[in-house]
Image (cartoon, rainbow, N blue to C red; front, side, top):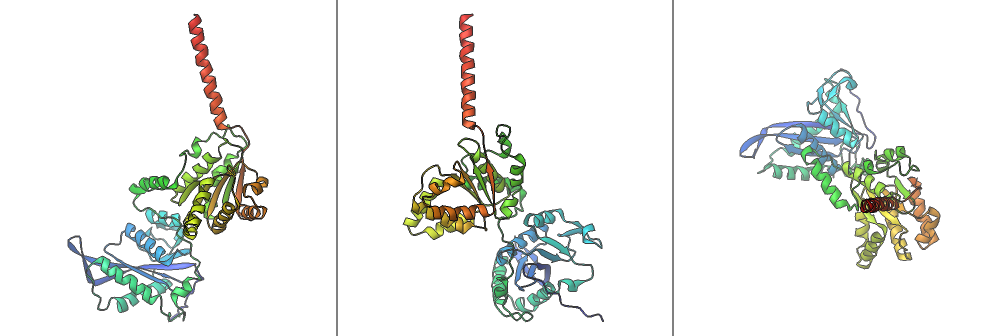
Length: 409
């Protein structure tokens, strides 16, 4: 008989998932007895396990269980290994690239960016880690189990996961919770909406909580009036790749040229992609940080502001900032540096930021972190507000001339 070689994965590389069916156990739900199925996932490197019991194996349920597992692990690996379950693959061919994946599950995987890997038919040992977990659950957790509801059973399952993940694993001779720290999983920065009917509602809620002063889109921006802006550069920013990479954006230019419009429009795009987004005027930001500092809750305030995937800080330099405000501003930028993206607008050139932040050393430290991974958009042109004012005066003059001509007729 041909020997099977144990396959070990690198940290953060792979997870394995399978269903378990426990035919001797039922649960009473919605007025009737239902069969129990168990979702199981294990991380290849750390051997972290997650289990969850359900009463159906639909694609929606599979996706929901994935999200719960990702929350439990604190992220997700580069790829996840599956057998040929219909919730993942509709048509399995010899080569994975020729196979047809379930469209909804493919959309879910693409949303987060992990790659589904299909086991070769009749090669169950390929995902031996999770298949051993199925048997382990059967022999260890389910023996003598008593529960009065599905919620009760899953509460016990979560406690069991915490227990086994806190014990030394027989193969690695290490504790899974400890090895999890080395996994380097991709963090859950946004949530996939399973119910598409509620997608618009979730977007509108995100917009309401984001504090945008204007709700204008990129389509509303008149690029022909500001020829100094490269629309291709703005379109690239709208892909949100800079957000995925934790990079910053700075819009510089005189008042009225559209800096706030473009920054807010990018924020709307981020909200559409379910990235947590928040807009705040720079002066208001400094006042809030000072208030939090005075009330001894600055760490909590900085923690809240640091978590947003996109933070828009508008009108830097519009009002003067004292040394305390500059220090507080630096603390926030340092918290977000290389982790999350910040969009800035200012009518001051970078050489004038020394004056804005009242201290050359602090200004240099802030600029160093802002510009390290950054796209800078310089806008040179007329003010939109002046343009609208001129248009209004022109129309008013036309009305006056028309009335004058009619009076002389």
